[in-house]
Image (tube, rainbow, N blue to C red; front, side):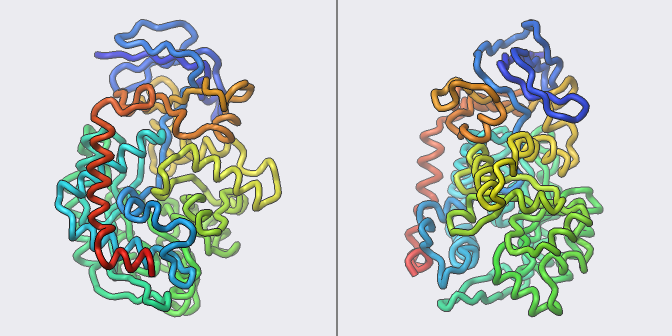
Length: 457
């Protein structure tokens, strides 16, 4: 059995459930498992003796969109593409990903998927939960090929053709629920457990306004039969809140899901920015979790503060939503936005945010073997180079990680005991070629007349 030893000038451990930073320890990996955490230099097949590294449990990013955010990239900043200042979900993301999935060949869709997985790995993630249109199954192929731990969440829609008109009002069409559930079942049968167990599925009804009661109840029933997590978009815009209120007797999106039995510990709800305080208290009481992605909303001038959700007792973790896919940068944003919005410098502390992408995130997906560095745990690690000038001098590794680090500091990423990123580079493929192929495929979508209208309208 192969073995790997990694020196950590700082190693994030836990003592009785509380974080503890060990100084000058080695993490020994044997096969896919952490065998030991020790002061003494162990014997191993491969030795990484690089002082100044902070060895963390592999970071979990439980909300990301490789394909849709690539379509929007550098087009939708500065308010571009927002009709009447409405969400780009209905002007850009949903219509163009639907059209793009139809336009691109399987190889082109795979190229976009590879580009996204490359960004995730270089951003420090070892595990990702990725909702995407079910017409892009190549996301699974790319994840299996490139080695990331992948919870694929192919969308289910009652109405897959949701578009904003020229006035910004969203119009809903189609009835795809039964077909989408059949597609989800087929993908689960084909992919769940692949990649030596790294590939799994989550149930992903798209959002409260694009999924009707019958589909949502069917999704919950199937997910609980299979014991898989349920993830959806919840209260991600004021328009969604208004739509649900009109349709369902004045209920809020959270109340709508509670009415249907979905507001429960297996629900991972992305965004929740338009939730009321009462909604958040309800979510906390039911044990549901919030997937907080602050930067994607900050670009549109909207505050999505980690500290607000946490203050209501809601289990809260951090994801990238695909926007830049820099998980360390996202944690920095979660910290800063929370401090500004609450006017409290101690809001969203470094240990709390680190837990949000390690132990707490692992707990949400029922994986106690992830999110921790301890003998017997799965060997998923994220190693950060703390020797960069902007991280020196260094007193507190956790505070420096959250306040000062970014994706450029990611030195190594290890999944299942296999090194995927080393010295900041993906070592199982040519980064330039992956980037060029993915970009070329997305540019085909950008050339479409409807894309030009969406971006410039």
